[in-house]
Length: 217
Ligand code: SF4
Ligand code: SF4
Ligand code: SF4
Image (cartoon, rainbow, N blue to C red; front, top):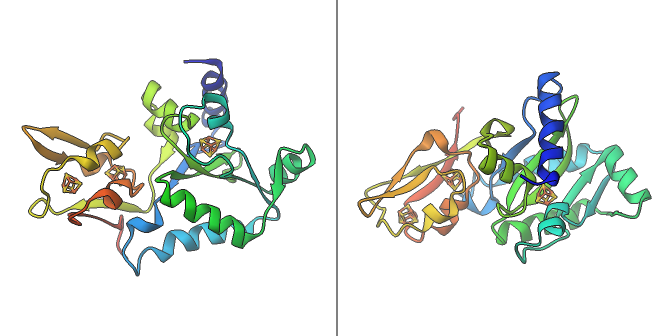
């Protein structure tokens, strides 16, 4: 593990120990992954976070600037409130309207980036991020250090109809949370490991996988 990740892990563990955070980030699923009626909800969730913030700014993704492992869009990292003001004052971020922020959010959706809200002490959201598994510090910590506890699942879960599944295996590569595996040429899905990102459902050409509310009301 390099210093970039080590610093964050030490910070998270200190905050967790002091019970200042319950997790470092939480997933919001891809809008596209949800059926017409349901997919409004994550957009609403994002809109609510943005509208409730006193200041919103967008900055270049620090993780992708640090690692440069992919060509995903860079200006997709939203910072909120005091951090937004500080980042604007330091010239690291620019203020952004809610409609432009939503456009960037939807473009990130199209690029298959994972939406994460990041938490600071007092359980407050300080950033709304669009992350890739090759550069994101939280996703890397989860993978390298087996720290699944750092990331909270979304309010959705993938559901696969095994009768419609043709075992093409495309969803296996998309699921960075290892909920999907190939066994004797058959795709196997363990819903207990699903964090509800939605990436598997947008790749499934036969619609065998859909996203459903985790706890239907
Ligand atoms: S958490 Fe995500 S969007 Fe934010 S800087 Fe890291 S990869 Fe970029
Ligand atoms: S992408 Fe769809 S069809 Fe292919 S293995 Fe996954 S669930 Fe089955
Ligand atoms: S099965 Fe994997 S890719 Fe699909 S929603 Fe769950 S965590 Fe995401």
